[in-house]
Length: 298
Ligand SMILES: Nc1ncnc2c1ncn2[C@@H]1O[C@H](COP(=O)(O)OP(=O)(O)OP(=O)(O)O)[C@@H](O)[C@H]1O
Image 1 (cartoon, rainbow, N blue to C red):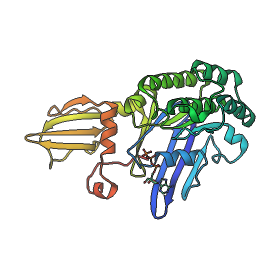
Image 2 (image 1 turned 30 degrees about the horizontal axis):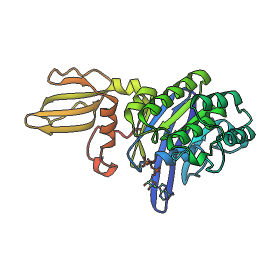
Image 3 (image 1 turned 90 degrees about the horizontal axis):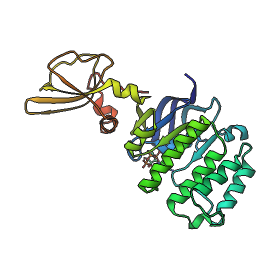
Image 4 (image 1 turned 45 degrees about the horizontal axis):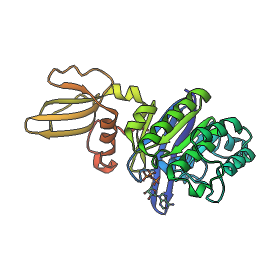
């Protein structure tokens, strides 16, 4: 598998608190990877480490086979869109395009101009007076017009209205198809992740809990309901991600690669949202240590 990001034992801490811990991850090339997790899970930290804006306190990370932002050439190979879509408030839209052309060897002037025109942005307007959504669109244009091999997008649609969000994601998918760019995108909007991502990484409490092809993950996670079983022994091949017991019935969300053959269990597929929320609501490592069969993905 060709990868765009490889992390091994990667960690970043602020004071004594780890913002990201023991992160071992291989993000495949040619995919749109969704990075999800609750507030404070470490998504921005991971993206900033990948963009070379932060230095790791443990482990290592390589991006496109090299140290992130280690050289000007490497810097030109990826585009990073930070959470707050930073632009220069006093600089016009046209000024941003000129700056992009000046800073980036592979700059695609035609693409940048066309996109700004399609978005209906006024080239003379100062970026500081654009709406939040327009700023995000301008910042995305700058990141894409570099013609990068990899786009790192930190909550790119957070400030967009539903229509702008849909258009932004459609544009992104077109860009991916036209330019064969790999994308890693963080979002809290699981419906958006479901629409555009074919690879998923779930981060919770500074750690990677789940990583894999979206389709394969959905095929191997099942919602089971059956007779109450809080104390019964379950097949060792089942990883119980979530369980609830009420009355005479138990409901489980399990990960298992083989079929569930026991007729006592009714098996239903899970939605991406169900699966992600189950991982996000898992207790921390210490609380989970006594529950057999649970696996912390890396
Ligand atoms: N500059 C900093 N100084 C101190 N702590 C920080 C700093 N940046 C991040 N953190 C802490 O690191 C942890 C991870 O933060 P991070 O921003 O990576 O999370 P996130 O998953 O992106 O969250 P959100 O979804 O809210 O954007 C949090 O506990 C946060 O408070």
